[in-house]
Image 1 (cartoon, rainbow, N blue to C red):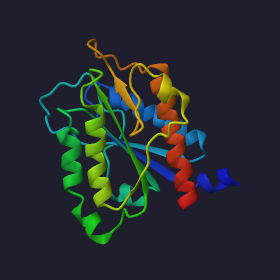
Image 2: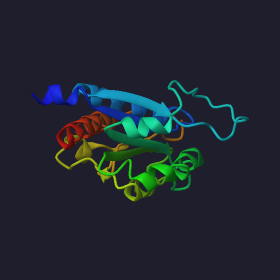
Image 3: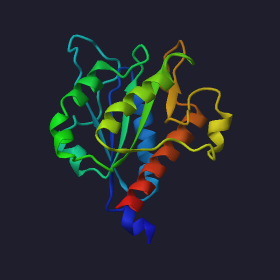
Image 4: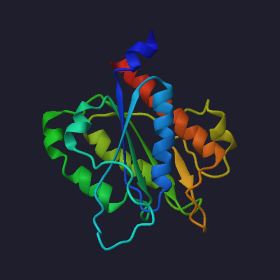
Length: 198
């Protein structure tokens, strides 16, 4: 019965990725969303620096604000930029005041994910910062409960605030087994809670 309810729900996975790590997390979150019986809609935001030759071309369409309204839940991802979300993602949220004025995102479940190049590179600060516009929009924030074994076992990314990846000095986009498990679990949880709230 639960699957029948979830199949009509859509989880929007909105990210910005410079080198591919955040996009890799987005893909794994989508795996969890689909495993829970919901639809995963992956979108990205425009690059503010067209002269920057990203070594990871965007594989997903650009977001349209109407898609935020239509989605039943949101996973929001950005790389760490000095402990903050990337300017590209901040610029997108700075232009959502019209949705805020109408209360169009109130009570939608949401969560955040990120990637940094070092273990203490600002992952948790970035996750907490990305939650702020979601709170202003009245969204219901979700993280990863400690009942997830990978949260206790990971030696790389993964926090109770949301999925993370630590790329290291070689800037790998390959997620560790624990990072993958946590991203998939996070996607399942978002989809499941969206189904319950709907």
